[in-house]
Structure formats: C-alpha cells, structure tokens
Length: 224
Image (cartoon, rainbow, N blue to C red; front, side):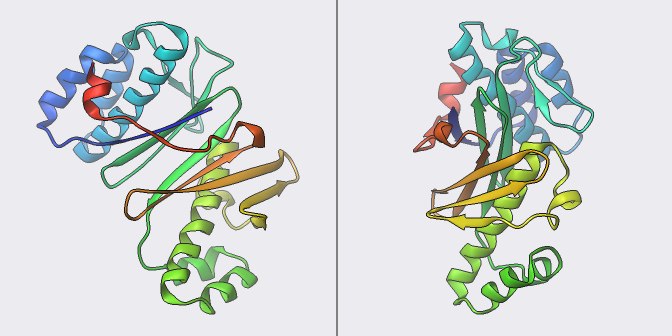
C-alpha cells in the first residue's frame, strides 16, 4: 500500500484546469470543472492527480488513461483495476491519498482546539471524560486522534461520517487504534504526524499492509 501526500499549489484556476487536462482522464477533468467552489475543485483535482500518478506507476499506463468512477455512496473506485482500491482526504492546502490491494479509508486534519461539543455529542462517555481530564495540548491531539480514527473507518466501510460515527468505539491496542465491527470485522487504524500540525489516520483491514511512512510528492513531480 502507498500513502502519498502533496501540497495544493497557489495558481490561477484556469491555469490549474489546463494543467489537469494534460494529465488526467477527460471525464475526471470534466467532473472537476463542474465543481463551482474553486478551493474544493482544486483539492479534488489534486487528489485525482495523485491517484493517477500512483496507478500509472503501478500499471505503466499514462495518467490520462486512468479512469476513476464513484459508487452511489460516493466511495471511489478504478473500473479498469478491480484489484486496486484508493481513498482521498484533504484539508486546508494538503491532500493525502492511499492506494492498495484492499479497501481502506484515510483522513487528514489540522490539529487545533479540541471541539468538546462535538465530542460530547458523538464520542462515548468514557472518551469524553478522558478528553475532559486531559491537559490542553494532550486534549487537542487526543480529540483529533479519535475524530480521524472514526472518519477513516467510516470512509473505509463506505458510510457517511455522521451516519456511523457514534455507532462504534475505537479501542487503543498497543500504539494503534482498532475497531471491531459486527458486519465487516476488525479494522486497524494507524496515525501519522505530518508537517507542523497535521494528523493522518489510515484505516485498513489488513494490518500487514500499513506503510511505515508517508511519501511526499511536489506538484512539479505530479506535473511531469
């Protein structure tokens, strides 16, 4: 499994779209063009660019030949590569992509002040008490560990975050979190620190596939 991140460049949107046309499948460019919010469009486009770059490296096909579709629930898939799975997450100017042979979910967040109202609504009573009793910096980090664990799991099984986030409780096993789901089995969640204040959670069913590190690509490498 590959876990790759990049920084979204600052450039005029028309130039950004013209760059995408040179590197992405025409259907994917069309999808990005239809996103009215420029920030969201560029996040989505860079995510697709990362996926195309990785799959091109695996398959030998040109990036423009990599077709990407989405199920009705929004979960993405590669119609020409049924044995490859991918998942994308973005926040602020960062995008992270996971590509591998088994389904997975990935989430990236910028660590900020713990959102205790959200924790009280969606987390378990024991988790909320643990947050309340933590020091400020520890509380902030723990909140985003728990939040990204939930979101990466929800993305792995293909449900909306708010539809499932309160229906399971991650448990800490050694240095990783786990979710034991009645329907889909045991999932392992690995966290990574990235940059100055980002946290990434990767949720997988096959623990042996967890990469040790995150690869970073520059936008220049993706445009090559």
